Length: 287
Image 1: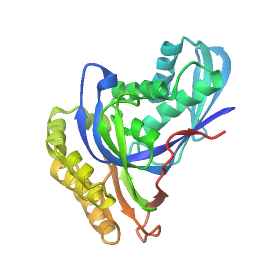
Image 2: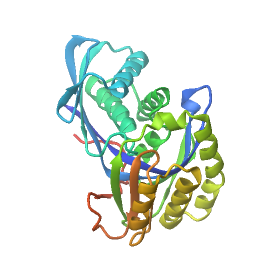
Image 3: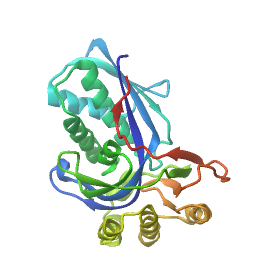
């Protein structure tokens, strides 16, 4: 396989949902951090027409709506008819708030564009992947953050080319994360009650963070968001309290049954926790 893409994972700390009729104007505003672990995607052309084969962590998968929809939309956009094999190596937990669906969609499209020499720019690839996320309800803001890298502030919703991002400057912080299980993103971002509480709570947070763009305030606002929306459960709260003691701060990953913290120290005594660096480069071709 010639075409290979690495898309870093992304953890959202707080967010506001913006929905419009156009999926490319739908998304979220908020802030999050991009990790140096993510999804490695390789694509190879197949001889069979229209066939899509998906392999995840070495196993052939028949039910992968994200990757398959990404290929369908790319076919619609470019008109290519050939078959492709898509192989993902996922380095973080799936369905746990790390933005893996966005990473798989974007990696699939970028790798296919290079492998098949399709007339698609990076921003157009991002727009297609964002549409996949919105259509399937798997996410709203991970995609543009994963293209940006760093501690990302999403000041306008939508994919690259329409959405707008900024970044917080930090000095070599690490991300400590602990996953306790999966959480269905779609069940929350499509529920009217959850959306109302999320948007009411997030109101004003962006303005505060832009006025004082620091990792410390990002984490304080993230924890406040988790508590006031009621999304954090007692088990996550207890773990966040424990993580916060020797770090910049800790909160719940949005949306996943995961706790994360920013830390100056790459070591942790929390059993089962993973330590990652912050990725500042964003999605990229690796060979």
